[in-house]
Amino acid sequence: MKDIMIIVNPSSGRKKAEYYAEKMKKTFQKHNRNVAIKRTEIKEDISKFAEAAGVKKYKTLIVIGGDGTVSEAVNGLSNLKYRPTLGIIPAGTVNNIAKSINIPANPLEAIDQMVHFHEKKIDVGRINDRIFLSSVSAGPVPETVWEVSDEKKEKFGQAAYFMEGIKSLRDEKTYDVELTIDGKQFDIDLNLILVGVNSSIAGIPNFFNGAELDDGQLYLFGMKRSTIGQKLTVLQALLFSNEEFNDTQDIAFTVPFKKAVLTIKNKKTFTTVDGDQGPEFPIILEVLPQRFTFLVSNE
Image 1 (tube, rainbow, N blue to C red):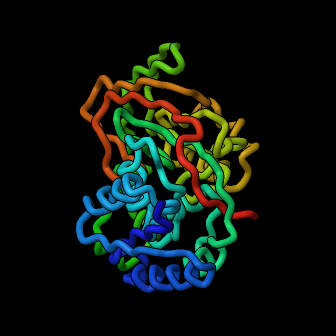
Image 2 (cartoon, rainbow, N blue to C red; image 1 turned 135 degrees about the vertical axis):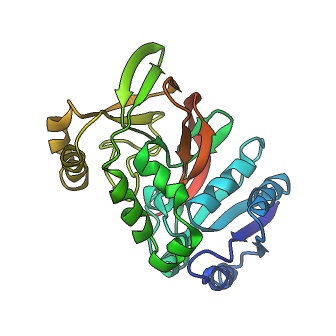
Image 3 (cartoon, rainbow, N blue to C red; image 1 turned 120 degrees about the vertical axis):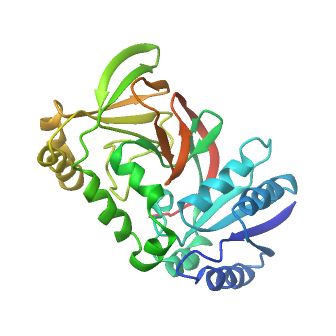
């Protein structure tokens, strides 16, 4: 069995990702670990290197990059019988996957602490034939995520998403959704659909209050047609006092589930999956309990 492979996306972390990779290598070498660094040139390299780490039975695979890089790596491993333990050094514009498993937001802190992290099996979700670790969404706000240009991300960082997202709150289009959730069917009009694997979504640490990394459930958030003022009220409740979210149930709701089928009947619509454009509706969503082992913070 080989020891550690590091996959690094050189364009991540404002071009500092390769520096982080070398520092990570030196840190592990001080603990008598053997490290191989794989640098990506195109997106497809991420899943290719990850699959190779599984086939060659590396003990640990560390990904340096943002949510998209981590998601690609996990999908490269998804169909293998042997999957290495995964570590994340957050170096993207948005690092919600790392946040959800309590990885320090500062890459240098994460590097210094990772040698002391412990292993934990966590749930992931599957949308059709693709794995996701953070969220699946549809609606005017999520659509802005994969429309933000690389130039804006580089210039403004995470603020680029906020600037575009706030504009779309005025969009009043709704989706005629046929929803089958754990065998029960509903028809409902929604302005926003958001499915998460755990409590942390879009940088909000307790978006799904009480959700755990290994509870064997996915979580659906739905928002009905509402004014911009009502949307901001819901957002404020989620950001600052989740208990007050109960007062907005006529506008928005959450529900846990294990498997769901969603069909949008009134328009052609694509999903956003872990921050990138995903498949078109209809979609099948299901939880894969404790499917991957990650290195997580001891705090």
